[in-house]
Length: 83
Image 1 (cartoon, rainbow, N blue to C red):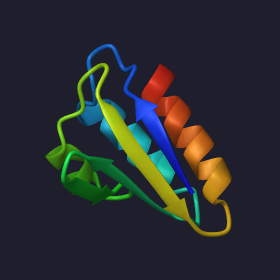
Image 2 (image 1 turned 45 degrees about the vertical axis):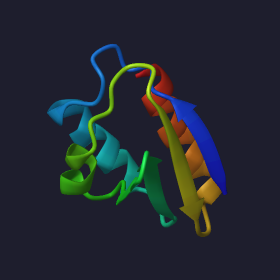
Image 3 (image 1 turned 180 degrees about the vertical axis):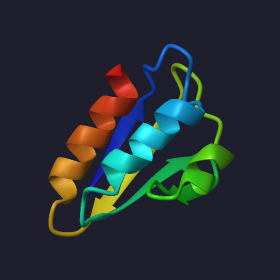
Image 4 (image 1 turned 90 degrees about the vertical axis):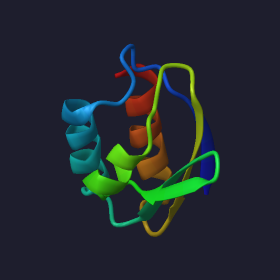
């Protein structure tokens, strides 16, 4: 499954909310990846997530495969859109 997300975080993704995002992502069994431009990262990796600069209004693609993929996309998508 995949979902296009528009980043709604007022200050983008920075160290503290990136750590929270990785913690949430790690609760899911599904493999979840984020694509921005030509870069694709595993969202369960803090180093991978910090390597991509996410600013407000950036569009990214979240993909998930696995048992709880739909729930993972919903929860992680909402985090990026509204947190």
